[in-house]
Amino acid sequence: MEHSTKTLLKTYSTNLNSEITKSEDPNIRVVEQSGKFSGQEMAIIKHSKERLVRDLTDQGLSDLAIRLMAISKTYAGFNTSFQDEQTMQKMIIEEIQKNFKGLSVFEIEDFVKIGMRGEYGGDINNFSPLNLSRWGSAYIEIKRPVIGRYLIEEQKAQKEIEKRHEITKEESDQRMKVYTLRELESLKTNPDFKFTDYGNAIYDFLLKIGIKFNKEERKAYFKEAVGHYRVTGLSSFPEYNREYKVFKEWSDDKDLKKEIKLPNYFYALSISMGKQNYLMHYFKEVIEMDFELQSLIENLLDEKNLPI
Image (tube, rainbow, N blue to C red; front, side, top):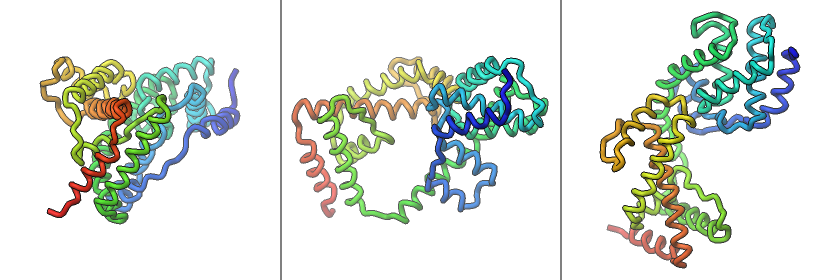
């Protein structure tokens, strides 16, 4: 049965909007103020920071497909008609899951609107799974260099923000100590606690202040992470197909002694996962041995902050 655009939009607003929220990233504001990016480029950057399609529920995916169909009707002057709404919806979902899970909802909406206007070439007002694939691929090619430039500017922005909220090294170390011990305590009180070291902040902090991690165990966890992304990397991040091929060829060497062309998305993910999983292992050992980690951290910080 053909649904009206009004009905489709109402469904979208009710369901999908509950799953996505606009985020506020202070780095983006600083970069935008620099004037180094056009309005269109800033839209790409901002929308890339929103909730990714891979994080949507099945209902959210279904509602996104409905939203895209509604957009196509609007841009075609309501002349677009789908003989089988459900089949079209299913095909759109399959295409998104196959190729665009690493994009945000807003990015997919954007490239459909641009495609419907004919700005990616091809037939105007021709919405189909095939064109969805073409438009998305064209968008990713445009996005890639923009995000590359942004990542450089983001680092500069982060330093500027840090200067604005400058804290001493001692204050930073104390905050990290509190954060580390809080995570450890959470794991002590709840063995099922889902410990994650986002950004590897705790791991890098402990290593920086002088805690000696077991090199062989660290290497084993890194290899395990490489194996994980070797199996799941392409299905989870299909938009990074070229980087995955480089990563897979590199990881063919079981000892991982070959050099890999850097930067590589999957190599970076493997390092991050390896650190997270090893740190979980380390924390569990601390708990099992009833080791006083707090005293060790405080002693190392005292030595680190002694005047030279």
